[in-house]
Image (cartoon, rainbow, N blue to C red):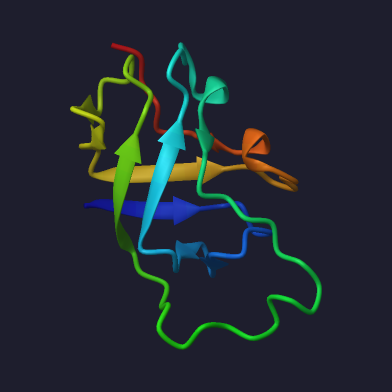
Length: 106
């Protein structure tokens, strides 16, 4: 489990820079840098639709992260081993507008 900080404020799961999804998937099978990764779990907030939160989903600081970025030093058998992960993507409209800022090429 990693300490996650998410700056993708328009994601349905983002609550005060924490994720309420429970787990995420970082994509980027061929990524050589952080900008070639993405948060596959991103879901854009929609006006009205996301005004009511599911009471069983609570934002948490630590989260399980599956990772497809096999060239990342923190990827161990498709699991993220970083102690702290930053997901970025100010103004993202889809997952391609997000990135794992913690990515570090082996």
